[in-house]
Image (cartoon, rainbow, N blue to C red; front, side, top):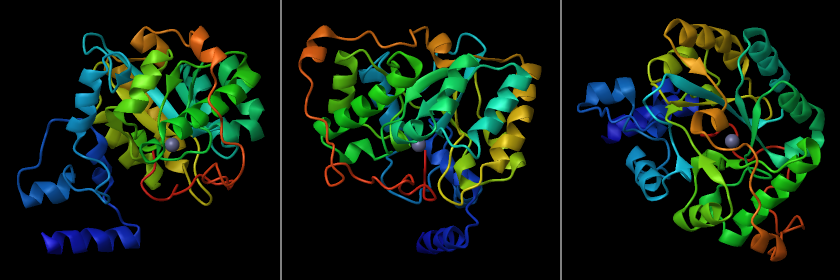
Amino acid sequence: MSLLVFGLALLWSMGEVPAALAEAHTVSTARADNLKELMKNGSQVKPSSRHPAGGHWQELQRRYRGVFVLYASRGSRQVALTFDDVPDPRFTPQILDVLKRKNVKATFFVVGKRASKHPDLVTRMQREGHAIGNHSYNHPDFSKLTLSEMQGQIRRSQNIIEGIVGYEPRLIRPPYGEINAEQLQWAKENGYTVVNWDVDSSDWRQLPAERIFRNVTRSVKPGSIVLMHAGGGEGQSLAGTVAALPRIIDWLRANGYQAVTLPELLKVPEKREANVSERTHVPKVPQTAEEMPGTSDEIPGVLLPQR
Ligand SMILES: [Zn+2]
């Protein structure tokens, strides 16, 4: 086992990370049962122990039914393509161009701080019929924040998004997919739907298009929610995502799938229905650089495991 860990660490340090490592985040029940399979699929191997098995998410999905979602009903062949860490002027317009050309509506999870710098790109998402969700203000790991800090991240980003598109999104995707039960309870009481994924393209690893295509098409099922990115960190390329996307869309169509927005897939409104009592009691939102972690321009840890 230590040899395996060493080997993986070596691969990791060389930037030659097996794509399938990121499958740790999928909720597939398929489990590797020997070392060879483990090396090939990596489904049990994780670079970080932060993420328990996919079962942890499954348990939260059961406990917070309709509030914490990994996938939709398996009963229809609808799926949702979702793009995190937007807007990013390097990649978001290219992704939007592909979606427009292919006539597909998708869902974008917006980082508030980025939206305040590139509001025109958020306007374009809205104009072209895509759904918009909240991906925090500056991409911290919610599970490391207090409830109040997490609320500050959501509200600050909601305010920015509302200022651009005219409404507050209902959908939240926590950075890295990390969120705890207390935070989910708050989301539930305040009209949010928290959406992770069951298919991880692992595109943030800067994989070639072929690998991204394979990661998606081998795992997708009816009702799947597919994680991709249309924004990255400094020096991070999503060229593979841009190149893979048309092929993924063609494959989905050829296999009888229909790509729809998350509100359509989940049959929920795109806009949050505001809770009056919450409006009258707004907790303090951190405003200073000291109070708000990671206020640099770049999303922290974006070249590390990044969702
Ligand atoms: Zn993210």
